[in-house]
Length: 132
Image 1: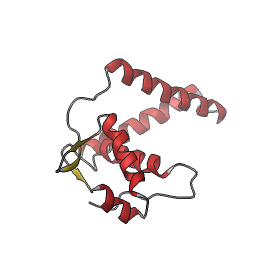
Image 2: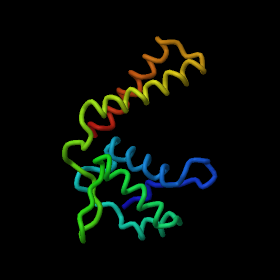
Image 3: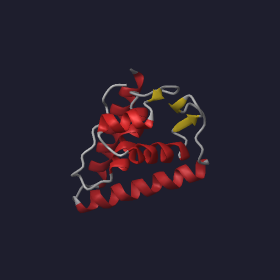
Image 4: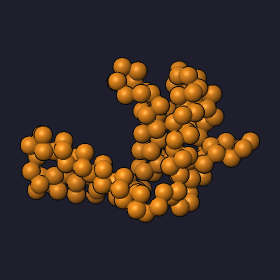
């Protein structure tokens, strides 16, 4: 596995959350694909110089979200199936994230038109990455 993951112990963000978000980004961006095997917990913990519980917690939460799947004796893999959360639950989570973005945009004095332009730009960039 490439060294995509870089944790910053001084960021103020818990290490397991940093790892979790980096794995989610790698999956969403196409760097990790359904069926890809992730390194074993202890191996990744050694590589990142963190406690194995940090990696285990990130993997466990991602498994609960349906992004990873653990197979006894085989390892942890990127899931390729349907999300575990129902559509309504996924919608509520995304709405919550959008609300956070709206609050930040408001406080940064970003107008609705500016925010929409930024959104469309970022969406096109993600779509390009997924086409590779």
